[in-house]
Length: 457
Image (cartoon, rainbow, N blue to C red; front, side, top):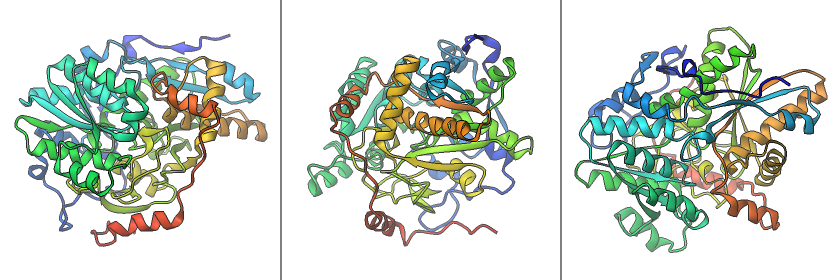
């Protein structure tokens, strides 16, 4: 049997991030203000440091990774590229299934790939504290660790349903010195208003973002940090795909299909973008599948619109596939995939038909997660299980067609802090949920009067 992993070789670690915006044949629509006019860097300055704003708006193809950031990332990077032999055997498929194991990081997910650079750039800019939101807790715990390592204070607004369902994520954040609050909270005007309207609300990422931004703009020496969606976040995550390309080249492999779960889009972008560049250059017909939950189907049933990233509309209007910023998702256990909108860069690729999107149900994901745990040993996060479910679909398709196929997925994090979800599944307490059309239309109605992105020509 050939080696099942290729990792921890320093030459596989990239020294630059890849900015896919440089290679678009048709430029992405710019973010705009409420008046529909393009955003200027100065308009973002109260929320982000200018060095990250420059990355957010950059169209430079390669951006150097600072040595100070590399020194911290080297503690666990490059992450392993592994092959799921036992899963292949269980499926009796001719497909080869590779996965980039991002669970090797200290917090157990891909999130530190951007948490550390963001903490570094904020510290360099003179910022003392970061405020952020988190869904399932992967991002909050990653930023808590990064802030402690870099020397910043950290405040995390955690979506209330995840705060209740995943108490160990809260403890992780506190262990790394962060303050963790359930959102909506009584700390902000936004939180107090929403609690007054619905004391039992499960919360949402849109609400938590509003609270974090409100905290930021009303505090000294504080900036906001986001774990997904924005261009500079996707940029930092491309370290995943750049490593994967080098690792696969070492064993003479190249994927036919690349798969990642997609909440805000960063882990899918991180693996896919370096390979999408090959497709845009005409070097292959590689397929890319961004996987979302059927309960939060922004790419498969939402619309490409200008929408705010948060419920209080404190962010700029971003060009993205969205369910509407007022959308409050059902409390499925894949908390990291409950965001109402998709990263503009990922949305642009979907709109240009360079990638595809697929929605899957919660129970199928847990079945896939158990099969993975039974064959590969690792217990995946519920979010990661969405990518595994579609990888299994593609492997079964290869078996039906009698064709070999090389599948690459992003194993974006472990599920050891998500065992309550597994417990609920094993006890038969979980149910599938499809967003009703009337609820979707009601949510989209909240953005009907916002500026519209330009039509494709």
